[in-house]
Amino acid sequence: MLNDTWVQNKTLSFIPPTLTVDDIAILRTILRSLCPLSIVSSLLVSITFCLCKKLRKGLGILVIAMCLSDMAHELTLLTASDSISNNERLCFTQGIILQFAASAVIQWPWIIALNLFLMLVFSEKVAKYKNYW
Picture 1 (cartoon, rainbow, N blue to C red):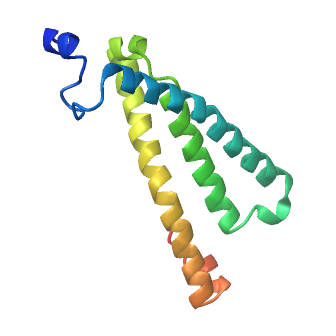
Picture 2: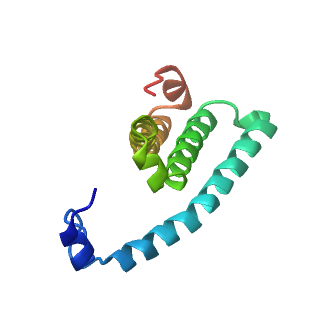
């Protein structure tokens, strides 16, 4: 529970005091309006992946893995609410999914870049057979 100091000052102790509760509400609104756009974009990439057989190898697999991680990340951000934080098991489960998805969203572009580097410097065969991912 939040203490009385938070209610009086309208700031959170772990966030710089320049952000008020109203500022945080605006940021939350922006986040919740952009998450569906990201989910739709990832779904369109996934549908394209399923429809085009040429994309179902190498970098296409890496990109689809990144899209799936992004969708999981955005869905956990969208479903975050006070009702989940009041339920210990749901909060714990959502925290695990969010930590995994957030880490994956950060790591997949690096893995794709490594794969592209191997393809450019050596050859596509090296990137294909040295599956670092």
